[in-house]
Image (cartoon, rainbow, N blue to C red; front, side, top):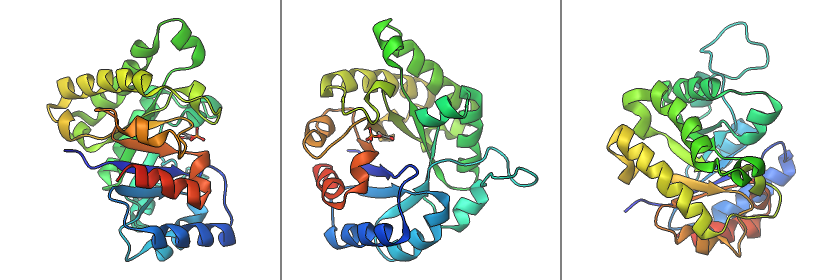
Length: 246
Ligand code: PEP
């Protein structure tokens, strides 16, 4: 039985006072009965680590450099994330693929860099509305995941995968549990063929998950939790979603 994982993706939101309040509420609301983490902007990692230390809540980043170190202005390395106690790094979020032109190969290199430092990559895959309407969903997510599987090779079973249909992110439009489950089953079959260990790998769903739809999504056999954007910024909403994973 896979333990569910709920991860908040704060994106470029937050402030010191607001973060302190949100994290204190999460700490006070434990235990959740599932694994819970928050992926915060780089500049807040130190304070997040300090506030969550000693709890069973984990933290992570929303990106990581594919490079180890050196003259890469603005980049943050996996070693630095490890030093900040990060358990996770999101890679290949659709906003980075779209606004920063991240290719499947770059996403794979970032996942490899993270794993090399003991930081678990949360690899995001997902189709646009045009691709779904054209019947390309399966081909798109398999292509995105295949690049990472190929690069990680024997370590591929160590990643977390997040299926995030682009048309459902921040739009209020959620995939139905059945739509999400269908894609998760495809991804799990692909992971099983590549690693032989897909039964212990977690595949999260992301895209307008809210307190009122989380339970139905998490009840699907291949949905192992969620990657939560907007709703992770409101303590009551995020706590309710985490409880749905318990
Ligand atoms: C996300 O950014 O990963 C996400 C799923 O956002 P939202 O929950 O706001 O759709």
